Length: 530
Image (cartoon, rainbow, N blue to C red; front, side, top):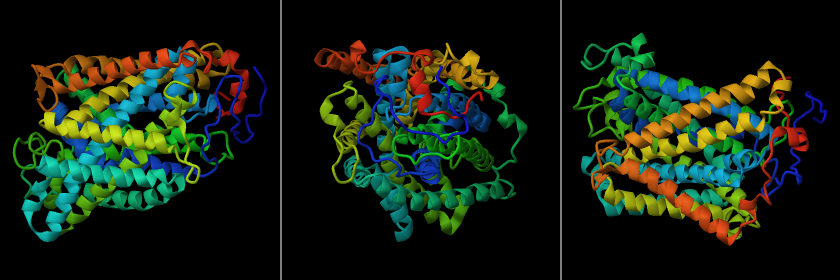
């Protein structure tokens, strides 16, 4: 293997030998703080938690904090694999590019498709949440509860959703600098209000007047208290949803500023982000369960009427006159996340188009704003169409899309995590104990765990009672969504292979491992195993 200085600043030269090359994105525009803010915006804690706490609590009850903690473990293991792969092969295609190099073009294509499909699902969900909290905020200001009910009108709901998608897409269209400024403001606001809300719930849980409230117990953090494997798998799928999105930071690898240390700018931001999320999510889950309890009526977390949007029901009881601030925080969180979430599929589509895995027309970069505008528009259009269809066939569209999203995330995260031990298998044992664990053992465990959850959840989701209970011909809607979405990916893959075979024959991105990619290993070192 080529020699290189572990203490030298990270460099960003891409390698023609491996097939990895630049795609026209502007370099040096995003630092650690900027990447961290965009990552927080993509994960959208305020939106994510209001959509996920209810479904998680319905599956595992008082063990909701435990299941959020358990969801963090595979995310941490996967993050180590992502960091190692990003260090060896920095590329905006992330999962698609790395898996293609490790396992070949066919598996790589499906990994890229899984990422794109997951993002389309969450974009539609984000817009739906934004619509609900827009009308709720207006109803609070106007002191007219009937206004909040307008979000239940399908036509109004879909039209407003499309407007939100258009606004967010326009901001992303204008490039990363415009996106970054917008995110700083929205992230600061939602984080401040969310912390206030968490503290208020803990205080309310200790209030004797709150008959449902109870103080947290250690058993809430014990995953072994969960009743069944199916409930555990379903809970994990939901909890993985809340962590999903941190890898958006890594898709900006070609746009971040050079790092002065051994970790790349985007890798630093990603690791900090994962740490912030686990503390915030477990704390919020604990506070919500402590305050609301598991009742089947009112604000109880087993009340199906509030399951897909818990904070909407808790806002006024917890914060009183300040409830409008929570509604605005979640609205802003969802809107900002639509904008930042679009970064990931757009850059994945850009990379896939650049390497010939999808039509070349998708890879166009806007001459003025330097954004992948065609890929952005395509992502937004597909997400909007999906949301409109789901609004008419699902009883609880937000709940079902979250569960289906969890399945897609487990699928492509699992495959990507396994790419790390496979890619580094011939070199890692020469690099030291630290590298063996961070590049090989731990990502491998994380990948296997996520694929097990994916298989178990897919099987369980065929049950008509799974998720919201929506079904078609006696088959669970969530299961149908998962199978159909992956099936569409397979069909499109074979069509593209027929139209443009070079990528699928390994002529563009060569399948290799770290032992044969010595030039690639010099590109970007993060000091693993040093």
